[in-house]
Image 1 (tube, rainbow, N blue to C red):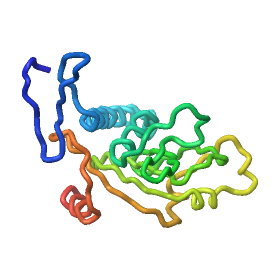
Image 2 (image 1 turned 30 degrees about the vertical axis):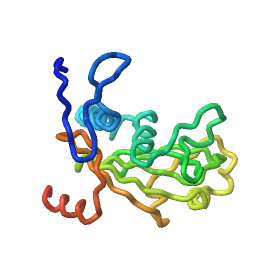
Image 3 (image 1 turned 135 degrees about the vertical axis):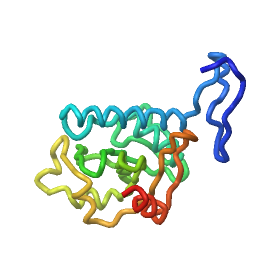
Length: 195
């Protein structure tokens, strides 16, 4: 980065901020997440081209940071973690899971006590993020009784989609280095334009 004290401005946020401790300009958190997303997308494309599988595992640090940034959640520290984040407004316990392009599976501790599961699906074909939100009751209802004592349980988004869940859409914008809310209508119009 050049030694210039110029800042890129968008209507929503400042992309570059002055960091007092290091004495240099740095990307703000949302710009860092966008930068990471596009690097991860490159890695997924390489992974697929080399036939190593569908996609490498997404980083928990990355997915939890996205939820903190987009929803205002806070990190959980100093307790045995049965969930990933906490909503400070109403003290909800949040579990975060992530997959790529609507296909992957993940594991979950069936004994975890959380209020909501936020399932992030990175749609690399459209540079967007689908966040589906499920209650603890919905997640627990799909765990077979004989598996409730297991340490980890494999689940996929397809298993949960039979249940109603709230969905929120976001768009990664490489030019402005922002993550923007996207309505379903905007998303569907974009898909038509791309195809």
